[in-house]
Image (cartoon, rainbow, N blue to C red; front, side, top):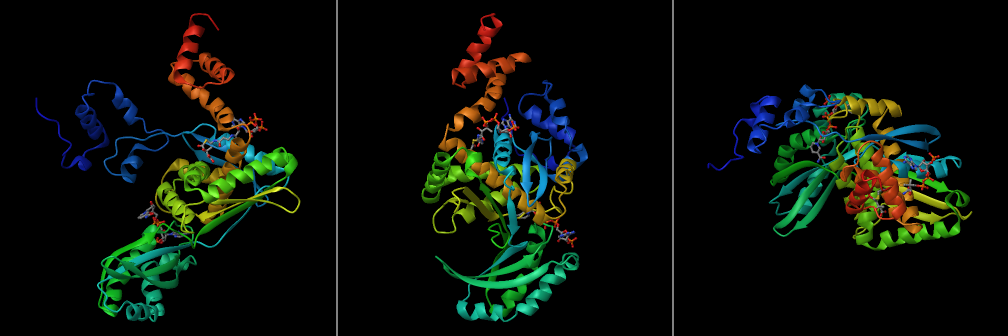
Amino acid sequence: MTQKTSRISGFHKLSVSERIDQALAFAGLADSDLKALFLDTGNLPAERVDQLIENAVGTMNIPVGVATNLLIDGKDYLVPMATEESSVVAAVCNAARQCYDSGGFVTSMSGTRMIAQVQLVDVPDPGNARLSILERAEEIRAICDDCDPVLVRLGGGFRDLEVRIVDAPSGPMVVTHLIVDTRDAMGANAVNTMAEKLAPHIESWTGGRVYLRILSNLADRRLARARCVWKLDAIGGAAVRDGMIKAYEFALMDPYRAATHNKGIMNGVTAVVMATGNDTRAIEAGAHAYAARKGWYSSLTQWEVTRDGDLAGSLEMPMAVGLIGGATKLHPMARACLQIMDIQSAEQLSRVIAAVGLAQNFSALKALATEGIQKGHMSLHSQNIALMAGAQGDEIARVARRLVELGTVRIDIAEAELKKLRDGGV
Ligand SMILES: CC(C)(COP(=O)([O-])OP(=O)([O-])OC[C@H]1O[C@@H](n2cnc3c(N)ncnc32)[C@H](O)[C@@H]1OP(=O)([O-])[O-])[C@@H](O)C(=O)NCCC(=O)NCCSC(=O)C[C@@](C)(O)CC(=O)[O-]
Ligand SMILES: NC(=O)C1=CN([C@@H]2O[C@H](COP(=O)(O)OP(=O)(O)OC[C@H]3O[C@@H](n4cnc5c(N)ncnc54)[C@H](OP(=O)(O)O)[C@@H]3O)[C@@H](O)[C@H]2O)C=CC1
């Protein structure tokens, strides 16, 4: 028997249908009925799938839920969230419900500036090189702005220059930061173009050699901020508040806990980023790098007791999302989600996402500090477990309910309960 090979030259030149045939044949599934599944691209037109990524064979549908109760900067929002995880949407609704009557969330943004890095090596006199770059700020501005007249016309473009010396094992590197206002674009392509255009100039000014020219995902000039006060009587009293503060302090000091704490925040953040067709990896990389800025990995949120004894939460994190570029403009569902929120600018979207991240963290901390996460999360997850056990139709709700009653949401128990139900025992 000949060994099957993944070395397929020109796979990208095939049609979507031909690629599916090849992939199924490779897997020994040519006779299966899987092709129809791949061909069903849902709300993303088939030709768009093939335009967005390479070697496309289909789409992966993720549920979109709408978070309710969100009052942000005095405006009511219904926020679409794309997630495969149960209880994430419910948690946001739940947190937002508990602060709706006291005014909801207040948000702000530090700006819409991105950083592009230009790495210069083989410089014997890094101090001298650094200053000779800084001296040319106006020349650099002209080179950068010339790359993107559309952006400049829209009020964006080059804003500032920073040059750092990074001590690497092979010698000092002179790292130039181009700080660029990218307005309603996430801005990766815009700033990468500028960095590439500038690189030969930096080489000629310094005599060094440029290697990397790429944006930084640590977008700390583009911080989204959200804050909110939850009244003591709305959250269930001082014991709940104090438990939540203790939970926060755990994340503040311990990276093992902070990773999970921030994962909970990203449950909300990533879901809105995904629903709007933005780059989830860019946001996640920025979030985690920012969480480690103090020298240890820590909480992205802060929780405090106010003068009145209420619970104040705040979140500050990089938020490089856009309304232009990537899939934001090309995915019809992303456009629809933006329309549901009536989003007019990247800044507005960033601020809504920060509020959702804070709400998510509130609910997780509250659940963890009181009844534990399993009761709420697993009771919603129980439907998935019932489905996995093979329940159908009204069996799903009945098995799920039984799992919650038993307090054990496990597949083997779900199978046993389903069997009992079908045998007429429940
Ligand atoms: C699950 C709840 C909300 C139940 O909370 P509850 O208080 O038992 O629910 P309730 O039935 O009393 O309803 C209260 C409100 O919650 C919302 N709600 C309630 N049920 C639904 C639903 N089915 N669909 C949509 N919304 C729902 C809804 O807003 C509702 O108000 P109403 O509409 O009735 O006026 C609560 O226990 C909770 O918020 N838990 C936290 C869940 C969570 O954080 N999930 C994320 C996944 S776990 C994880 O990945 C992260 C983690 C936890 O590890 C992070 C960390 O460690 O920090
Ligand atoms: N490390 C990372 O995170 C990387 C991410 N990426 C990807 O880059 C993509 C995002 O790049 P991005 O530069 O945002 O996208 P685009 O290059 O598609 O869009 C930005 C351009 O759109 C034009 N534009 C039109 N209207 C506006 C407006 N209101 N505000 C701002 N610009 C406007 C601008 O000028 P003009 O028309 O002249 O172009 C601007 O340069 C994402 O897909 C991301 O995944 C790519 C590389 C690395």
